[in-house]
Amino acid sequence: MAEVVVSVLLVLGAALALVGSWGVVVLPRFLSRIHGPSVVTTGGLGTLLLASLIWFWFDGGRLTGRELLVSFVLAVTAPITGHALSRAWLARHPKDPVDLGPGRDDS
Amino acid sequence: MLTIAGTIAAACLALACACCLWRLVRGPTSLDRVLALDTLVMNSAALVVVFTIVHGREEMFELVFVISLLGLVSTLSLARFIETGRFGSDPFEEEGDG
Image (cartoon, rainbow over all chains, first blue to last red; front, side, top):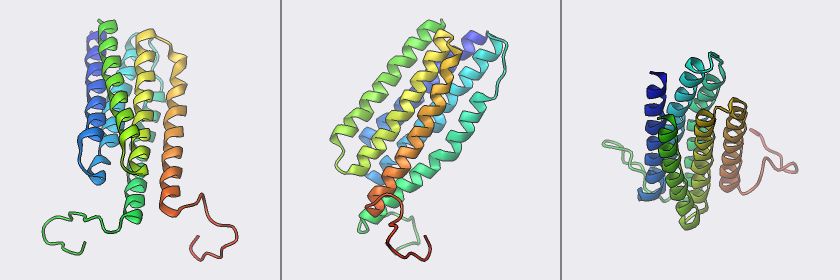
């Protein structure tokens, strides 16, 4: 039973990582491309870490906090890298029009 | 069944790494290359997790810590270098807000 769940989670996490990396390739602008690594980190790697947690819990009989620790670190640091990259982009390209949505026209 | 799922997952992650490498070679700006490098590091950490599960090598899990923290530090420092043009703060310059 645990093997079925872990297998499904493995394929799902790898597919999410593939979707994020494919977004890095096909999205047209840098400020939209920056959303790809977030999908890879939180979705793909988070799902794979959940699979690892379940597998070593039910197969090896050990429940450790390593996977939860890595998931927490990744969930905290993924927005930080995205923020740093977008800030660097806006510092280097101040004329790049940012679509701020309706009602905001100060780009 | 776990072996088949692990093979499919490794193939998907290899394709994802190929996507990152394409952006790394092709990227029009250096920030695109930093972004591709960040994604590549996260994909390799995911590959290590898949390897850990399929082969039962639980001690390899420490690699995920090292890879993810190295990816964080390298991405942050490269983004800061591209933003300001230097590493850290200039020691000979008086700065008010650091």
